[in-house]
Image (cartoon, rainbow, N blue to C red; front, side, top):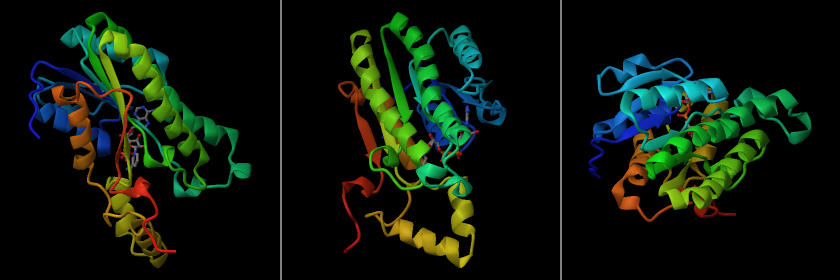
Length: 258
Ligand SMILES: NC(=O)c1ccc[n+]([C@@H]2O[C@H](COP(=O)([O-])OP(=O)(O)OC[C@H]3O[C@@H](n4cnc5c(N)ncnc54)[C@H](O)[C@@H]3O)[C@@H](O)[C@H]2O)c1
């Protein structure tokens, strides 16, 4: 898919690596000026003078305001905001609900849900003034079909899916489209570390996970980026409040035989 995003300005959170980096690079490739943001500014990502790098912790209200101001000061507008920054529940934190600490719960909710709220609130104010904009939230299949042992992440991502719809309803009158992508397992660095771990326990876990995916493989970050590009493009002008699964069929039903 080729899209002309020339003259458009995008802000992507969590753009230092993984899915966020793939999305930011793809929007840039199609002509957008991109503000690559992450906890530490990913300066090497924004080496083209058309782009900028920003230090932005999405849980910090003051940093969110400063980052949005910096993008507006540089480009005068924000056309596309991608709420990608997120943290999962690492294997060491996977526990039944009776063992989840309040700190663990709040840590995940703060980044994965409150972060989306804070950035969306700040960019939507600018987009309302422009009377146009696209907000794209990166949710997860587990926000639609929960897994065990990851209650905070599951709840946060379910929140992102419904926050997306709620914002779509409110912002439609300002010509702002709000959609989400729910990726399934995606081959990021963390994933690669996992599949390259030769221990039989990890390999068994990997095989089990793949057996749940009808297409039999994880997504490439570029495949999630492709969906984001579509939601940022003129071709999706009548789509808002949608959660687009990009999951190899994960949420279509049971892929295994009983
Ligand atoms: N990889 C997957 O299998 C998968 C599946 C479904 C959904 N997702 C979602 O996709 C998004 C990206 O995941 P990924 O796999 O690329 O992860 P990743 O860990 O590779 O990258 C996440 C990025 O977000 C940044 N980040 C973390 N906390 C932040 C904060 N408070 N403020 C700003 N930046 C912060 C990190 O520094 C990192 O660069 C996340 O929202 C994740 O939940 C990933």
